[in-house]
Image (cartoon, rainbow, N blue to C red; front, side, top):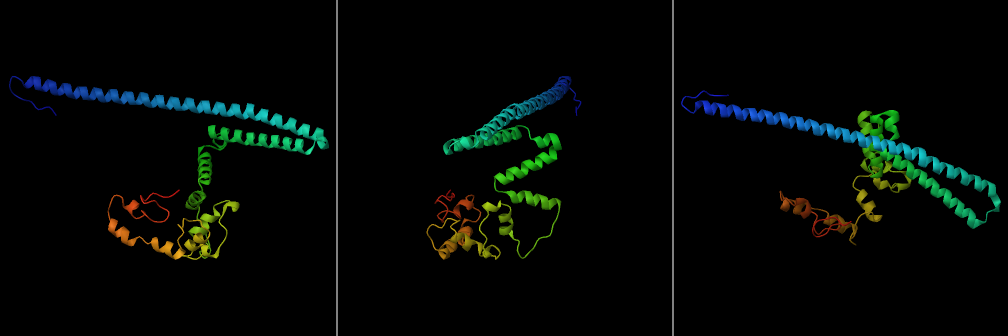
Length: 249
């Protein structure tokens, strides 16, 4: 808003005020234009990188995959041709080479999938993202996150007598990686005793009763109250933590 003023300097003040507003508008226009340019450049670079990754993935799949497959076929031919004439050591070496070729093929597949997931081309982005989530959750031991997402999309019944946090997380792991079954997995308040007996938790040489007693933090928590280092103070000096409160790895 420009206010008219009287006096010899009034016109000069109005001109300066208009000039300042005009410079601000020009600056805003220039900033918006530069932002648009940078955004376009970033998009262009991302597209170039994606094109390069896709091209490299295709080349690895076609060229390297073809070479490994050809070597495996020739090796199988040699194995069948030589047959029983190979001694035990030669047979072991031949089997070892075949195993290394299989590992090389698996490595090639992982590299290709990391560069350009085949699901992205064949089934689209939603399926590729879901597969990526499931794979990374599995690597991190967080398979139950994928299951929770499934339950969010589609509800299902479960047995309240045999299903709790412990059993649910246990079943998300591969069968050869699961904790050995124990009745205490079903009973509330017994899981800590089971983990103590299996030495799956840091005990510090304490008996189970003493270990459980030192885990009671009410008094320390009340004393720490709203302290900024609350989390550190309630852990400091306890089994499984250094005096600084950091966990022992």
